[in-house]
Image (cartoon, rainbow, N blue to C red; front, side):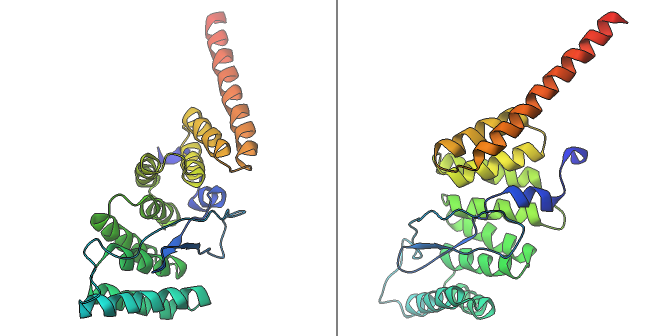
Length: 229
């Protein structure tokens, strides 16, 4: 229920900002917004920016990959607008999951949340097995002017099933579950996140355990009061 949700900024504040871009060199660098996200965590990842049917002899493919590579360089240099133009051009020439994924990142940086959502949804349609795309889409749904924690949870659950030992996904899933009042499930995910390497999850484990205990004590007190009346 909406009445049980934190404002979007509060949820985002506790999530690990995971918005990443894909490069041609099968390496993953992490791009962070100057935002409400606390203590981002950097984990190296591998990713591909080519499609299963890429061929060096296809002129359109070559040009699309050139734009994608130049866009990544611009993004690394901090020129988000130039990167956006190049990624958009790459997607127009040869629509593939990577160009759309990276285009979504630039929209996200520029606070064009609806456009980021559209790009990541199309990227997922082309490459549904990408946990990063599902996680980024979840982040966009949380910071949207009209937050959709239900859709964020949907995509985080998919991301978690695709990458079950990913500590950032577990942490973000826990944060949204906690914000929607699903404390026991949130506790489980915080524990998984800590197990896989997110040390600051320990603080949230303590806090949410106290919340659960307080909730149970309140329920016991309520039942006791009913019995006495």
